Image (cartoon, rainbow, N blue to C red; front, side, top):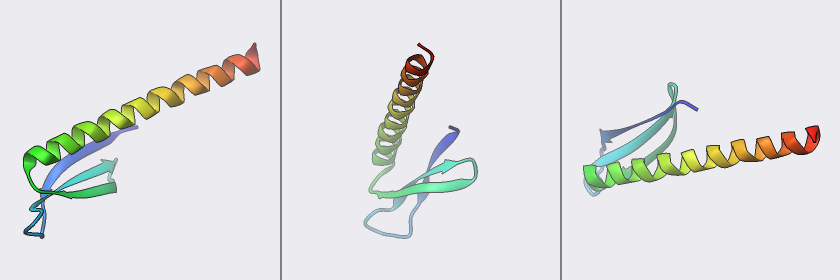
Length: 70
C-alpha cells in the first residue's frame, strides 16, 4: 500500500495544523492537531499501525495458504 502523510495548515485557530493521509492521490484520513510535533507523532503512530496491520494480514494469508495447500 502506497501511503503518504503530510502536515498542512488548518483553518481552525485551536488546531492550526492538520495531518493528511493519502493513498496515491486519494485522501483517506485527516486529523486536526495543535502543533507540528503533534502532527509528526500522529503520523508515526498511524504509519506504525498500518505496518502492523499489513504484516498481520500477510501472516494470516500465508497461514491460510499453508492450511489449503498442506
